[in-house]
Image 1: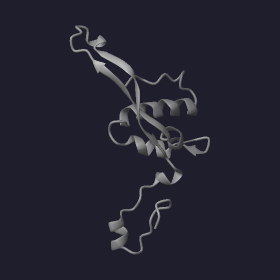
Image 2: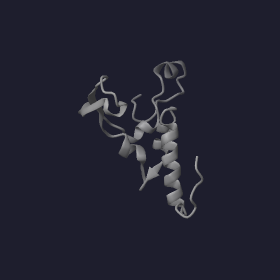
Image 3: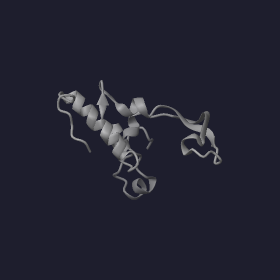
Image 4: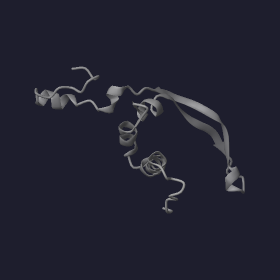
Amino acid sequence: MPGVDQSKYNTQEKLRQLIRRERSAEFAGEGLRRADIVRWTENGKMIAERVLNGELTRITGTIDYSATDPTLRAVVNGKEKIEDRVFKPYNKLFPIPQSWTSTNPKLTQNPGYGN
């Protein structure tokens, strides 16, 4: 990683933005990104409530294997909706598996997931 330009990141908020951007790139493929999104807050709300709610889409298109220039092979046609995603504040915690609560009656289900 390149060194941090202290003149550019000279406040706590700017440095926090840099760190969060780096963590988002580093952890996205390692299964750790959700923990950051759920833990961090912005204006008193979890960032997860903003970024994990909404329509999930994928880019659609075709690949032209006959093109000699690899950068011209992909032809993007648009987007396709996969599903609507909903993140509620209780989704910060995962549900406790039924087998655990059946085995140990002192365990109670996390809020939002029923009894």
